[in-house]
Image (cartoon, rainbow, N blue to C red):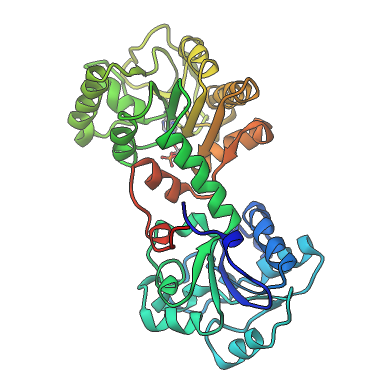
Length: 396
Ligand code: AMP
């Protein structure tokens, strides 16, 4: 267990917190989804309550080491200020004299947000001098940006070497959910994987095959597996160079006696964007010129009892091209099944932008145990990797 905010005396201390404010903006630079900002409120409110002086730091988009006004964190400061009903001071930069002066003059409970860390090329290079400059403004470092802990950057890894450090409340929550599922899952443990590419999830599957009781595979990645079994998949998205590894993974699942569910029927079309006719297959084979765009009803029937019987569920990746409403049934149904299983006592964890969007679209987000704020970071945890931004934090 990592040290957390609750293990440290914060009173009157200048505390620098890495947060994930990488929020989507519209053309007028308004925040269109403030989930990530809201998720940091428990940590910020706790720091306020303990009388800390709060310096927040974050990145937005990919300015690639140059100052670009469209990637300024000003809209995030405005949104946070609105959510807290309190002024959030916006720093002109990250480590300049004016910014440091603002940091040093904070009173307990006041908040300063540094400008986009990635305006500095040093940030992503994990430059020690830059990390040290950031650290020089504070007395304690708190890591609360789960979405960035798989990166070793100055603000996520380097800085922890210069200050007493700990996990924030959001990071703690993320670690607890993933650790419990991956280390001590209540059985039956079911993983549901989908999305576009097998290649992105090979390591996740390898690792999960050592842990789960059942694995459900949908989305485009299912077609590489089906093809590796010699099944005709027509024009469906297949990664030819991954057929061999797909066959190996299927063999491993078999050896380990893991129940592995691939689609047994599909919604098919000739175009992926919904502009052409579509139909349902009566079996697993897909004819020439057609491609699988969603899992079919027989597949859903088969996996529904598996999902409803689960006590631990991890879901990453949609079951079909869910952006197109007529191809979204598989993904929406799975979202509802996971919510239903959770209401019946299962612990459910959802990671990855698309599955998070799907549970929101299905209107069941509040019925999921844990919706992860980090797509990339959660996939790396599922791969069994040690994440540098977590590893660097001291143990309790
Ligand atoms: P990922 O980023 O790997 O989670 O993949 C998400 C994307 O996979 C979404 O944009 C889906 O539209 C896409 N996807 C899911 N199923 C299919 C499919 N059967 N054919 C093509 N794309 C798919």
